[in-house]
Image 1 (tube, rainbow, N blue to C red):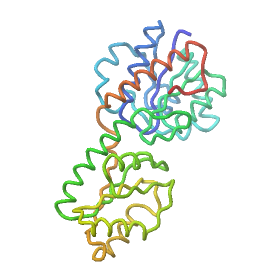
Image 2: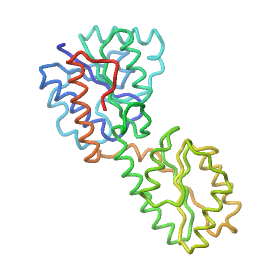
Image 3: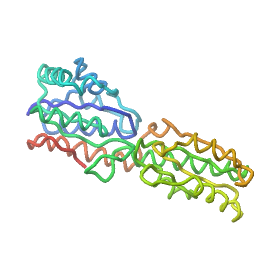
Image 4: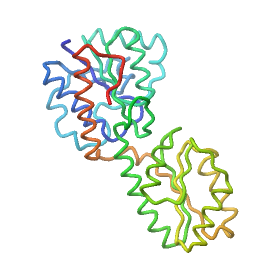
Length: 289
């Protein structure tokens, strides 16, 4: 194997740049040429490929986002899209591929492997919902971002005697909400994996008020149903008996941004190097981590 490719796909998150850096530097260390594929599978279909050097990844370990860019590409998951992807890989002489991303991206990588192309995946998603791995790149940084926001929200909630619903990302996984709720001292956490009745939520808020608390914090995963906004509307109707006025904060895409934490930088570096080593040793069709 003389030339490998690397791409980032799906939703962005902290840690992508440190991982790209590790793949490029590890590849060069092992005597390989490393080709960067821009905009994920979209760039793979359209041939947006360029050689990466040590200079290409200089100084990016502390930068958020991804220098390669990322995108979602429904066309890739169709047979014609995968054929076009394989043609691009062959045209540029790429003999192995490292895919950095979440479930959808890694599913795409598996399809390429099934078509006979060597691919290794690196789990990178703040949702932390990739089977076969304990923690994905980006999760630790996202949790720290959430916790920083939660601490600030508790300050203002206490000043005004309010109950706050704080919505976190995670799609259908409640990991971010659960862990940030524990670390942030929330009164309650609402996640898709556990059914919680409306009256239980009301009781939690009322109990916090009766116990003399100056605020009540509830962390809500975005995948919880009936959803944060629907819950807020119901709670507002019962504000007087709850004791607290109700406010909602959706943290949104701030959870995906920012420089990666020390933990994520180390994890990304280790997994990037491991992915290159796996390709060199003839591996493929698997994830590292």
